[in-house]
Amino acid sequence: MHLRVDQSLPLHGWTVLSLRPRGQHGGLRAAATRSGARLLALSTQAIELIDDASARVTLRHALKADVVLFTSPNAVRGANALLALSPRRGQRVLAIGSGTRDALFRLGVAAHAPVRMDSEGLLAMPALADVAGCRIGMVTGAGGRNLLAPVLRRRGAEVSRADTYRRVQLVLPTRGQRGLAEALRTPRCVLIALSSAKALAGLLAQVPASERPALAGIAIVAASPRLTRAAMEAGFQRIATAASARPAAMLRAAADAFV
Image (cartoon, rainbow, N blue to C red):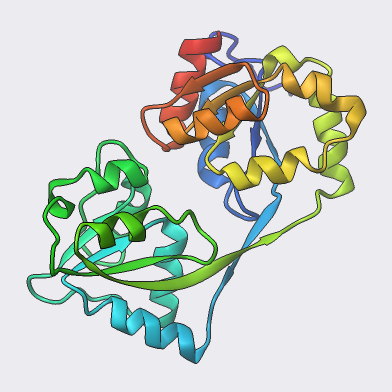
């Protein structure tokens, strides 16, 4: 019995490369399937939760702040693994994007997210405009982008940072390398859904020199303007920027730009 393939789907015949951390490809895989594409998981990183006494102390302190910022769903999961999340009365909780907001909501925590789902969008929110003398807790990952805290401190806030997870670099398995080489035979129909500059750098570091020309010809849909700039700096030319980091929004932007 042959499955019927709907050739009218916007990304029919395309391969979507997911650089998400190991074990976190489900949302993008489902969106790719709905768009008619196949997904190739190429994790160059894994998420490792930080579970020690020091992490609990810094997290407890951050969660007592007037405003608490969560910078990713992984930060939410890591925090909840250390301490059950329960906001204080009158406390404001902010999420960097809708995925992070949804992760908090599933734990019973109401949070607000910006329209532009990145650090710049978060900093532009009215809740962070006048923070002189305000205590802000930032729940994030070790080694993450260091933009939020310096800007908030310049605005007069007292910032407490709590790292709840770290990213561990991975070597692509042989199966992944073979899958990438096969996909690059038709680079015009290959798409990277880019949500991490470090993940892209991890992939580029492992691509053989013989495959670099084909890789440069693939399409990139970036989850933010910052990631668009990272893709340009890496030498890619077919680049689109999505309205949000949600998988469906990213693939819709790709279909509009490249099909």
